[in-house]
Length: 394
Image (tube, rainbow, N blue to C red; front, side, top):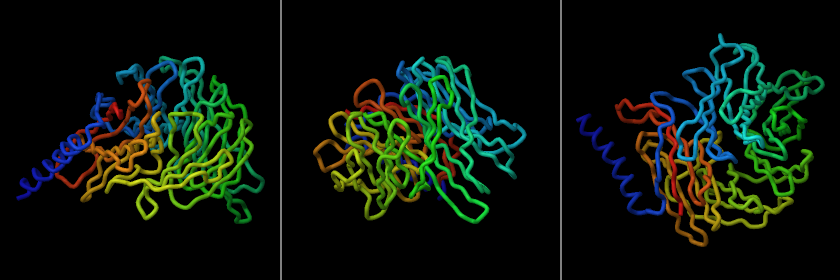
């Protein structure tokens, strides 16, 4: 009886995959590459490099290390970099990389977090690593936030880094307590040079917090930053505007860098499908609702590189689909000026979601990264591996 239920469950998964492919042929898998075999890394981000190829970054639990891998345009591995914790006797969740930024000299800037203390007495700081184009280490920095008067304790998050100016912007969040019992939350902005040095850092009091920060460079040289509130800063990191809204939204990564900021409410609840377009000074220019196929949502909040706009105005989400206790990677595309979305699941290998996605050098073609072998309600031993998969959304 158990075997019959097992086979029925497996057949149901593959039947769903076949139905999706027949029903929505415009979401097409181009190529799948096994990035890490028989291992269970946690990729946080994948980015296309200005000189060609991609970099995937996150954490490699088996090695107790932060992890990054350089790929060529086809997804083949060019180099692999692991960074061990400062105290190798301490098993912990640090260090790990949360962002990748291409530098002007063809190298790579990696950002993330590292614990310079112990599990009992943590001392978590931002991490900045500079690699050359071949993945060789050039510089490594630990960055402490400015200390406030009467500070008693702090919690640090370094969420993302993006190319900015002649270097990169590192974006994080800081929660503090003082000896008088007061608490404060701040946006943390670090300006880095292309060689991996720190130019300046600033704290901006936050009215939000809680979710990983999302960031987009703006045409005027400033930054748009969103966690549970949106702020806009100029090229010096000074606050220009602020916007708050209910719900957990995702920043849409635009095909047109001149476009206004857009946010998508892609989680569950009555507000799911809400699409907000903001003006340059962060007022609502347009707000509408788009149809979400049943069961499709964004992935967990730490995986923020999942929503994109295409050159024709279409939107695409690389998240997951949830049905009858099973999560699997799911893609939704909302064609421009059409109300009916296209959707597809990708259950092969049993990955619960797409960890991240990025545009390639071909319009409408995206690269994704996912990890297979997650637990599922079937008594099957599945192989743990990381996959890079290319999809054509045209």
